[in-house]
Amino acid sequence: MLETKRLIREILLIILVSVILGAAVNFPLLRRFLADEFQQSFLDEREYSGIRFITLAEAEDLFARNFQTGDGAVFIDSRSRQDFAAGHIPGALNIPVGELESERKTSAGAKLSAALPFPEGQVLVVYCEGGDCQTSVSLAKLIHERGFTDIRVLSGGWGDWVAAGLPAEGSS
Amino acid sequence: MIRNKRLLVVFRLVAGAVFIWAGVLKVVDPLGFAQSIMNYQVFPRTLAFIIALVLPWVEVISGGLLIVGLFKRSGALLVSLMLIGFIGLVALALARGIDTSCGCFGSLSRRADVGLILTDIGLLYLALCVFFAKPK
Image (cartoon, rainbow over all chains, first blue to last red; front, top):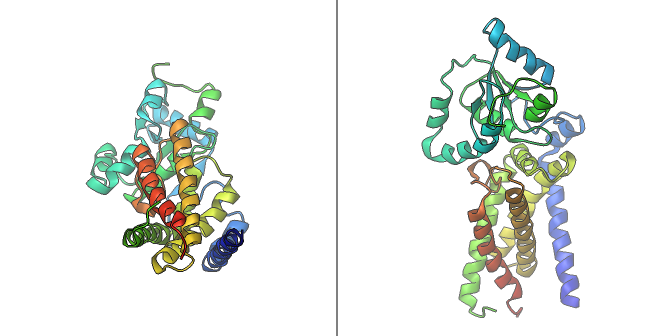
């Protein structure tokens, strides 16, 4: 009993010290969080200045421009191969973020460069399932690290796209 | 229960070193870790942020205590509890078909998969051996 109390006391002490250290070391970050800077994602805007979040309307506009003026965007689907095969935005490329992360350490991004044969100024729209999905943000970060400077994350993702009845291609 | 003291020291050093390493990689990139937590789609944003600030320090301190040998049972218990949490999270992610990096070693993270669960179970075994070893 005495031993249990001691354990609990020590654990609480460790957690307390961690809370103090975590808050002290990250004080500027804490202030930015309280100022609602990380509403959409935990992206540091200074570090990832080329990534921004767009609405469905903006994505739809870029999609339409692909056919009208040809100055739209390349759509990139960060979901799994199966999800992509079942349905995706017409013309989208599939780069499952999980596969890319595993490859990153070994091939130093060579496969990504091969998968993205575009000039650095190309507008890219990255999307995942929608809802709480986060893979689009992870993929956007990886692409940003390769030097692409205009990456737009479609917040509502595939879910919003389908719900709005926009064009789709795929097996289902 | 393992009684061999030398073996228990090795267990402490291994588990401690892994946790210090994992913790330090996250301490230097709290936002990246917060994003990794969000990837599991379990925690709300504020909680993910708080965990991202505090958990890496808990890892570093418990790992350090395991290595130094101070408060080692508390350190081992905390490490075990964290590992149980990690195993649960990864299993949940797998069950829900979430394909993500585990976030466990900062930017050096591997994929959250069955192999990771096995690694965590191995570490959990080391930590539990330390925890259940008879105190002097």
